[in-house]
Image 1 (cartoon, rainbow, N blue to C red):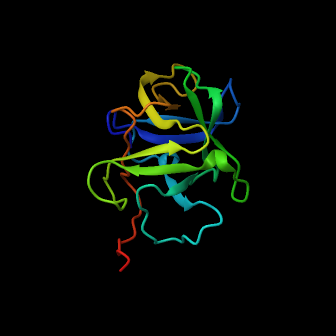
Image 2 (cartoon, rainbow, N blue to C red):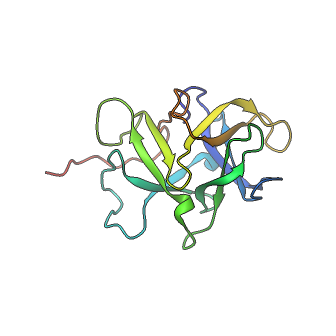
Length: 172
């Protein structure tokens, strides 16, 4: 959930009409929409597995639960603000470095927990996952743009909200 606007990170099987033409990603105000559910996955080639703690600085991938595509970014311009486009791309076994996001915990604590303030920085572009109150008018009417921005700003902070959480057990 975007901290400032309280909109959820959301996607649906609707492509952008410009830019990459990939599956669009938006901010959605509703709490109980299955298109706002994401699975946190490790970077391929690591020994990380489901249930492991995720610490600040870890590279993760977010897989859209309904379409199985990966949260992705690249240098295409986002449709409303002209920042870095954020899309969904690929599939279960089709992933590349455009799907890699570095988790950065804000404030105290080194382990990602529910309601922890975090930033997600795209590894390839350096852009931070961002949203603002600029909304789409047509296809995703009322939903707000999600994009990448290269500056660390107060309004590119996110929190995990609804979801299934595994208990945290710190490694000794």
